[in-house]
Length: 108
Length: 121
Image 1: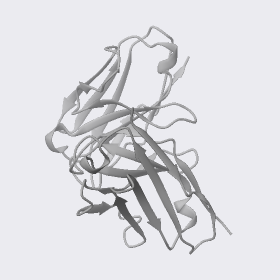
Image 2: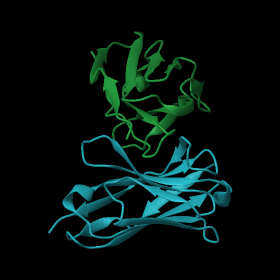
Image 3: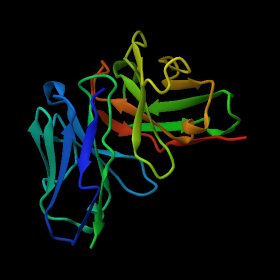
């Protein structure tokens, strides 16, 4: 099983600041099959990024993904008030299709 | 617009059974793989199971293998999760999610709102 580790666990920032979230895999993720999801309290997750760096439909260009192999990054270039949420990475290249534990981005 | 509506959750005793349903609309259901993902109260996301577009191939997390069965009915555009031998640690919100492709090596591009399963005596 591929174990995903996300850091930091919590990121405290202000609106307008840049957020950098890390997702590290215990072994190489096949074909850069890495997705990022956003989840707000009481809501279902929402797809942000797939294939490590492709934005999903309707996702603003303030969100970007990068990385390959075992190290991946989600960057939010300028935090908007609605971006404060929990972010999960998931690898879908090798079954079981594991999720990371999440990074909470909260308002400083 | 893709819509996924889960139902069937509730309170069940340890060792009991429950069947979850997910009614899909707004897309050609029989063309896409589907998954179940769960989230225990206050915890992160856990992938549970996936089924390919035809229902001919399935896969499960080790934590549910042998106890849960995923299936689909394309005549009803509905996904199911039959759960048996339920344990307290199965308590979670269960989400139905649509894959982007017909095969199950895919990200999940649409999610339902979830149904809560509570396993307790």
